[in-house]
Image 1 (cartoon, rainbow, N blue to C red):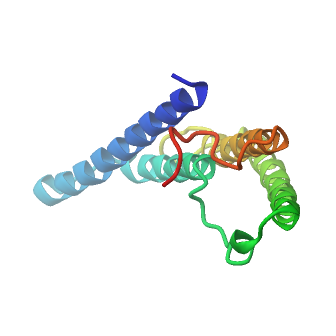
Image 2 (image 1 turned 180 degrees about the vertical axis):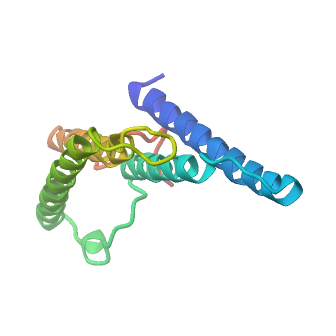
Length: 165
């Protein structure tokens, strides 16, 4: 099994854990409020934190599989050197956006280390770390995609299991 597939399955397992935790928190809290007039105090805060991580991990997976939101109406029709130029221009713009994402997320993590959430008393950096991890992982995937392109491989996903139909 390739390293990319192992990482993909690991991210999918983390997604399943986040989603399961959210369902338990929200549904359990609804049942407790409906039947007993009480609830879990941490439910809303924990489900929000799990949702942030769910979105960030999903974005990593989508980026690695080339299934992220993209506008390629023009570039999909290009062939030859023009396609390569636009592909590298796109990578440069993505790298710039990822730089700002990572820089801003790092600042938020540093600020969040000294701040605590009101209910769970966890550092707010735990939530901000989701976007930091997302940015770093996307940057690594972007470098891997660029390296594959330089070696002459078709621009495909770093995490795909097989060719796209």
